[in-house]
Length: 352
Image (cartoon, rainbow, N blue to C red; front, side, top):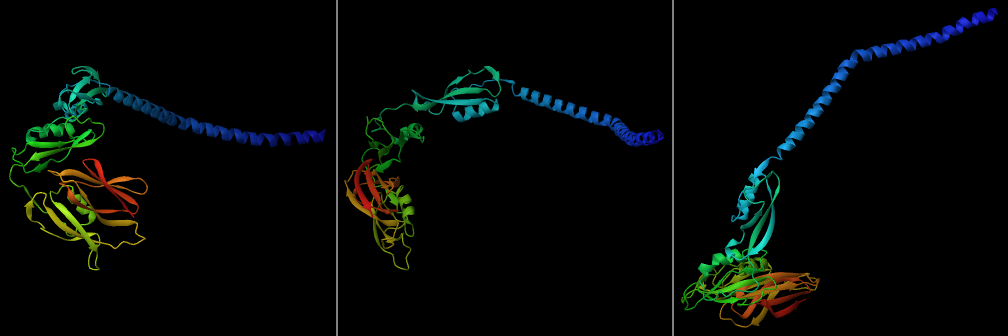
């Protein structure tokens, strides 16, 4: 019995001491949180309020975009001016294209929805119907008309890249008719438009011989020469020889009448220095020579290349009065060169 009385106090003391230490530690932590909790709670509430205020500000800022505006009147105005007026009113245009009965309407606004004066919300879409000009099913007759009088109208009708008929640079020839009179055209009157074509007009230059300056081709590469041919009124007869060591292969080494004034569409000789052909060459240079019908005026010719993979590309497009014709080329081996006169194939040659 005495042993139990001795052991009991020792066990109680052992359990009570750690418990009191834990209670003291927890009380200390609680007191610390109680002392710093107010500032923390205040900070959390302040952050929450700031967030709410920011959301409200963004909400009302978005509401400002819904303000009402008056739709401007853009009927009859050009598309460019109409778009600027729409932008000023914070309106978005929806473009629709339509043919009209008046060729002068091309590029102008025919209709709008909503109508001018309507009150709508900002950033709304406004439908604008834009004129594509006069719908043409066939080529009109322009012969006998003066080129200067109808050229602005023709440019308005056929000036776009997506129009089915594009206006080529007029060709002038000596004629007793009044200067500027359209003598002929291609395609002819009444030709139905089934694909994209170029309208070529032959115009009287009066009864005096027209002159032109011979461009300088010496030193030019084949690509540079082909680009020059597209605008030149000189008929070049090209020849070639194997390039010497001192010459740049693939360039013009000499020509006649360089820089001189001559009668338009006169013939001028020009000579190329070309690299000797080998079996390993992947690119081949040369001169295409053939003969076509002679015409009373220069007509459009086009040389196209169809490579071994079936890809087509245009080598050059220019005007030519016909007869003997020579054109330089630089193509890959296995290409077929095809010559067109007024869009009709007249000659082809395989390049191996």
